[in-house]
Length: 317
Length: 266
View 1: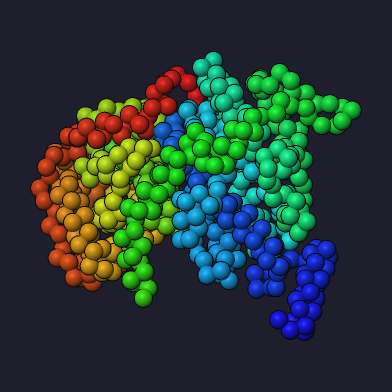
View 2 (view 1 turned 180 degrees about the vertical axis):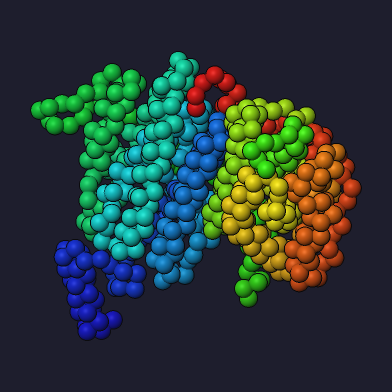
């Protein structure tokens, strides 16, 4: 490599960092350091595939939704999630172009365990209470973590997130409406919600990821903060979640299954029982309660539809 | 006309509404089982949108029935036993082997063939309902038409593409079409009340609707060079409450939560 090129490479890096520092948006065709591109690919492809895998636990309750009104609501919600997946994978595909990879490769990466889907979607759903709780608290958590990236330095991602966040607000309201109907209903309906909260509590703490890489060995939060892809740390996000939702959970008479949970005025933060991060690590290895089952569902649909993909390809060529 | 309806006229209105409602309800259920399993993500978004529209159509019909004093729309959708259902055989057939939650082995060819035939039949009926003597049905038909236009376009595109893309896709579609047509005998039937329904001018005659259907599908079948299928005589007639056990299990799944406490508000 010539000296001239080396210099310009360095200049490009400096220019890039200056743009990031000035709060400018980076676009798909702009020069970007590989570290930045790879961090974005990892983040956005995981986000996109999680939206798609996230449709599966909720899908379990779509046919079973109790009333026509609820059937329409949950259908609309899950359809939105698929739409988010599509939007995000398009963003990821653009970033993947220099590597000659596309969406099909991402699917293979998912099946072979190289691409992870969000830890919360590896969990089992057991009742209609879970369908409500997912909409209310899981989507509520998603709003917090996605709002954290609304100002992302990568323009296409920031714009996709704007649309996604607007829809997620509707989802959280949909979930909250299901929960409110249940907690104001019969003792059995109320018990459904408490039981759902008990089972999902640990997953809600896992949702934002470990506080630092000391907990689980890896964390990509440092690099995403450095490049202004996100603002807050995992723990800050978890604290926001607790501040927003603990009062709401308590106000409808539910009990958080953690007797140690309290707000410490001196430290100005919530103190909670740490979840078992060993379980989190297992989920990350696709060894969660429903990891393999959900992957199998996705994989079998991919294999069953191979002839359709071939047919569509033949039409294009 | 609607201000004072005779018991006989009302009976005919109810019969038509139950057939339309139960058809779309079951069709939407079969669509919702496909959620997350379609050949690509764009299709998952489109298919679930159609499924959602169709559930909305079922809700419109069940609400009309509720307004006619038949009970709540939800209980009509969820609680009526198999014998009281008026949907066609085609929509109660499962998507394939396996339960939707565990190892569903669904065939996209069958889905496309069924959805194409069902949607074109629905289009023929909705067009025929626009001149119904019962104003609320006319209004609903107009409302549904706007969405149905896109559904028809969607399934016609898939049907045409898969019938012409590769040798394999064509042969799969021919086989799927055969399966679908075998079950489509009662799709455009009104069952044993046909004379009464037609006399009340709620909808055109079965013959006229069949002609409408043929006019809709003929250009497509000509384009893909497949003989226009002949709708057979019904094996069983769903319009008269004749159904398979597949309907029982579909109703059980759909109403599982609702039935767990009928007095509760959900």
